[in-house]
Image 1 (cartoon, rainbow, N blue to C red):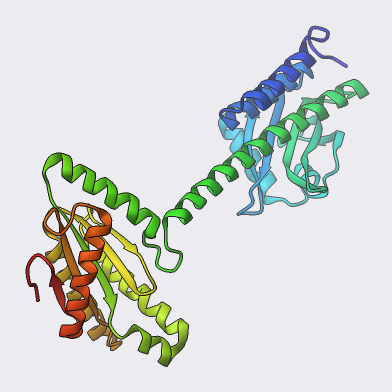
Image 2 (cartoon, rainbow, N blue to C red):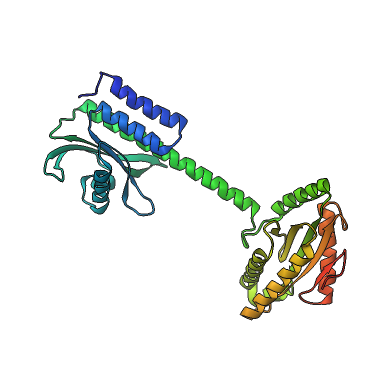
Length: 340
């Protein structure tokens, strides 16, 4: 076995792997560091890491050393395009191929070692790719060198698995955060998010002496929709109304689903009535276009005229909503002034 300066080569591999697992960081740099340390320790002039692409189902070149860019691209295409390529076969079968002798594109001889990158998850082997090392001409790989390369492959596999698990944790955390803030049916903010936003807007308006409008919407005759078409029909109506809400409000406004068929818009400033009228007209236009007959009514309350707390404003807006619904379908009312 030729490993540079005694134990220095294996120690560099160990150090690179330990650093990767302990500190994480950029996964590309981590893989390249382990690959470089292992190739130098084994005096392999060529080395590469191929990873299994979970979406494309093919091996993609992730790191390479000892090849110019053009040759590396051709090498990557060769492995990805040939399922019987030794590297592709090692990935598929999960079996190391150490000491294989083959020919390069120019006809010269080359010795290779292909080590599958495998981790165990819930007792099941999970194939991540292959670490491949190459020597020009015929090269004898003894047991110590084979053990070193296998250890390097395991370190690469562990680093990649850790990076992917970390990414999944972050994605799941973001998904859970979105789920905690959103209504699953409509994708709008939920009551929890509405409460937080409204409190923040009221606090800011109180400090700055500004206004905040709160509009509460109800789908007219929603109980009849559910009775006639079932829950699926009701859900379709709610999603349609949510679409109109999303396309009708300003960027500074917050829309939330706050009840079975109740929606709330928090509109900084005094333009809540204008925004509410736009939404009512938008729902009516959509209903005319698709023949659904959907309509919504709304009640609007204003800070500080109608209340200084979230509960006061929502209560005042709901009182106005009751007044609007009494007047008919698709109506708008405000406790501060009559509208519509």
